[in-house]
Length: 97
Image (cartoon, rainbow, N blue to C red; front, side, top):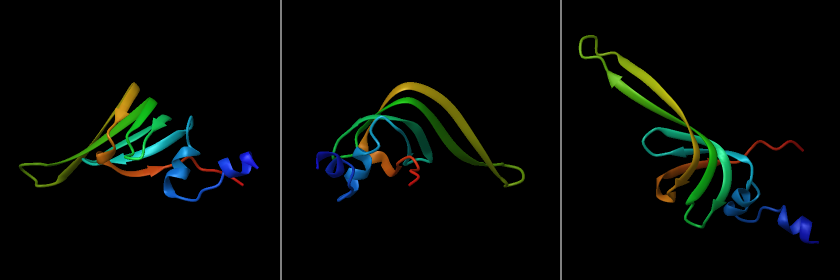
């Protein structure tokens, strides 16, 4: 009985609970994206991620041609505390049946 109850999704945070110790995708404000292993979270979506890859996308306008220049910057962070008020989207890992 306990095992079946632990793997059911009844509310949105249950999906995040099932993703503990797995790599998740987090989209943040300011065109930032994170991929990392979820170690902990709370009801405000504050999260602790490990082995994080951060991707920051910036768009600049060229002064002469007025063309958009899209730049992406990547960096790796061993541990990161993510404040929940900046979170737009959390995507759990893909599960196959």
